[in-house]
Image 1 (cartoon, one colour):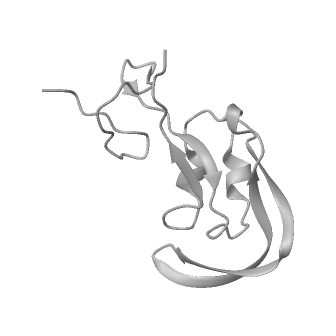
Image 2 (image 1 turned 135 degrees about the vertical axis):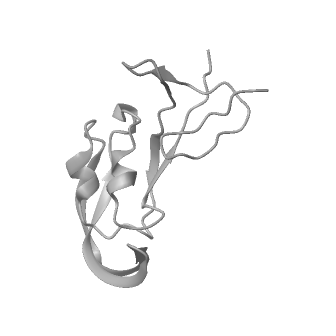
Image 3 (image 1 turned 90 degrees about the vertical axis):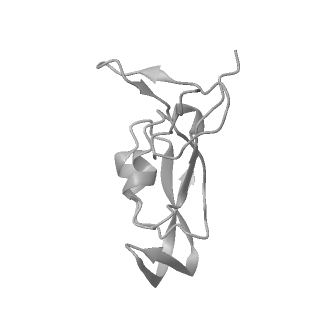
Amino acid sequence: MAEVFCDIMGNELGDGEWYQVTTKSGKFWVPTYVEYVDESKCTGCGLCVKVCVGNCYEMRAVPEREITAVIKGKQKTVTTRKQAVLINPDDCMGDCHCHKICPVDGAAMVCQPKMNCC
């Protein structure tokens, strides 16, 4: 029986050669890298910018807009004038802290594991 791999978010991965690393304790870990920011969900809170060790994001001013999203289990509408923007995706460490800290359920940061290409 083939070993089942999960990404850092706990999502079970299908068959394939997933890029993985070994932690200091010897456990396998499949990094999950940011692909993009879902602008329709980003409330402009800036938490992703604060926790990202790769400095992948910055906050930018946007025209005032309303975002309706599920935040901590409840549908809410917030008004924002800021937006997280992905500026350095190649510097992502794959720890997915941005996705985990995002207050929007189904976070605004969309992260994916990578296939091992070589």
